[in-house]
Amino acid sequence: MIRSLFNQTNLSESEQAPELSRRRFLRAGLGACAVLALPMGASTAHAAIRRPFEKKLSFLNLHTGERTQAVFWANGRYIPESMRAINYVLRDHRTGDRRPIDPQLFDLLYLLQHKLGTKQEFHVISAYRSPATNAKLAQQSGGVAKNSMHTHGKAIDIRLPGRKLSDIRAAAMSLQMGGVGYYPSSNFIHLDTGNFRYW
Image (tube, rainbow, N blue to C red; front, side):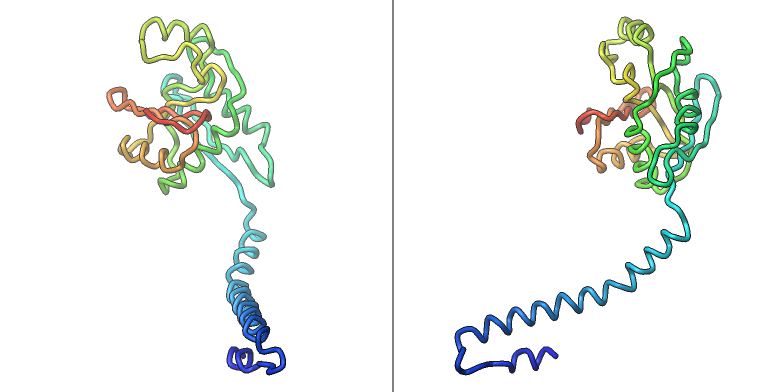
């Protein structure tokens, strides 16, 4: 086929023939690439039909001992009941106050989990903090921001058992999403849904 494309020259249109042959050659090449790509695309589509795509996370609140494991996203939408269950476990353990956690934070954790190749539960040091709790912590430590993203349900401090903190940090930074704080002396990683930055 490629040979026939190059042999199609018209002497009366000698200036146009090379350009036409080049176009036909490129079209043929693109067509061949498309055909080669079909089996992989088709098998992927069949796999997606067989297994609906779901996002699942597990958490252990280290202060309350409460656990939750939930599919928080399926069939193209967040699942309200699952979100409520997760929000309860990630509440301010000091006051009992709750606030809806930013769904993007769950998406970030899901991506991090897959980047690390694990399905382990996240050990949670801190997630939502009420303004009162945050103000109290800010008085005790200079490392707590007065308008912390924790007070908006947009941040979480986590660790993963059996995983080096430096590995979690490297994986989180490679995603280039949100804030990544590294606290080796306290043994946790801070993640938030703000602009990409790290410290």
